[in-house]
Amino acid sequence: MTGDHYFTAEPTTTAHPREVEFTVAGRDYTLASSGGVFSATRLDPGTAVLLRKAELPSAGTTGDLLDIGCGFGPITCVLATCAPSATVWAVDVNERARQLTAANAARVDAAERVRVAAPDDVPADVTFAQIWSNPPIRIGKEELHQLLSRWLPRLAPDGVAWLVVARHLGGDSLHRWLVDTDWQVERHSSQKGFRVLRVTR
Image (cartoon, rainbow, N blue to C red; front, side):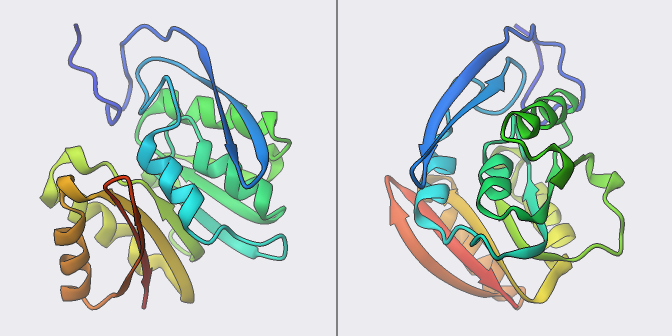
């Protein structure tokens, strides 16, 4: 056993490369994954609900999109596939996750449109037309609030953020906190114990 978590910057867990298969919006994906990253063996159920229930970007979507906590890149790859004219920023503290996301962007022929970065390496002047995240609830409430307080203000004036949170892990309390910090929040849908939140200015 190690002390690694999926939010460890440089995991020491043995990689054990594998592939994860899933289907979103009628398209099949086969992405590379490995130990030491979030939901290494399957598409996380919360991510699956988010990609099924939120409004995916259209083919005409342009600008910069952000995937917070990209893991091995399932959200990034779906966004890049749906919006071939957009740039997708894939952000994660986990170096192995970033490497996998870069490789998976190449698998879906989107390497030139995906910017994989550590949080501190995203240029300060970039604003986002859309922000997507299955946020890392298990880092703790205070850290989660700091994470969202860092990225949500970079939403473009007419932008939208899509978040998925398990109800039993605080989905409703996160909704209230977002409202209390002056965001417009709609519970867009609920499925399998997950809340999909649509967040705007």
